[in-house]
Image (cartoon, rainbow, N blue to C red; front, side, top):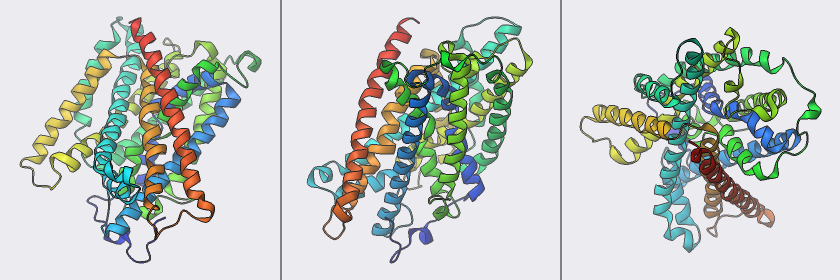
Length: 432
């Protein structure tokens, strides 16, 4: 889509503290591989092994295509506007303004809507991250010392999140992300010992289909696990060579392939090992009285702890650069951003204290926000960008039909996934 024959936005993009291709890979990888992967065995339980594998591949393809579509649309908007970089809401406002009259009427509101959904998505992730870290440390401390309510641990974790959340630049988050990546696979190394030990007969598991009533929850967890739109868009924006982010062998494709192999393996063996006994995060299924299991829990908890600033970066960036300090003239901007970051940690921690159950929250955040950001909105943007008579949807209008199919799939996932997640939340929190 991004025809750079006349104006190349990449040549006019100005980036403070640009990140390298390797840094972009680490950031993209770490933005996806978090609490979501630990819930994937539960997703396999919901859908069945074969169905879950096929749906996970399909969802990944759709989400990555949607993200590429989004970034290409943002670049195309930058080219037409002849600016170095158009943000997500700016691109949505411009693209909707090119579309049919009904889209033009809501173009400006659409920009605010995107910021709201994007902020909600990453805020939800941060709330889940705090609960995950607290739940894993609780199991270990309960074993060695005293049993306390998980809400106490969530509050304590919130205090420790404040210092690490003071890192402002995406470039300076790369070392934290690399450390988190090492922690991730170190934790997996110990965890796979338990996944490969005591495997029951595979016939005891749902090979083809799971419970049809839970398919909505599968989609919610899968969507939450596979994509992190805000971080991926921000990563592309901060690269020293952003043109290398997309394409068959770009940063996004390579990291997605590594993630997908890890996800299918983890979901399959996790469900095979624990079956009906799976908890919201498989790390909680590991025994608490063995050193290897304790190390796995600690390493994975530290991984998520170090990933929190990456997800929270998106929310702070939206508030500061899109609204509070949009023109860069805010007095005492650093002090005010510091206070904002502290407030963000406090609010997300309070959210975790009030709702400390992971499964339904994972599904709700994934189904509601990712289906909009990764599927529906990018498809609508492309439809609008090609609507003017000087542009074309291609032979037989294949781009238009493709986008309509994506919108239908995204809407089904949005409605069903959100409904089932809310029902699950009512049941889960009603027992609390």
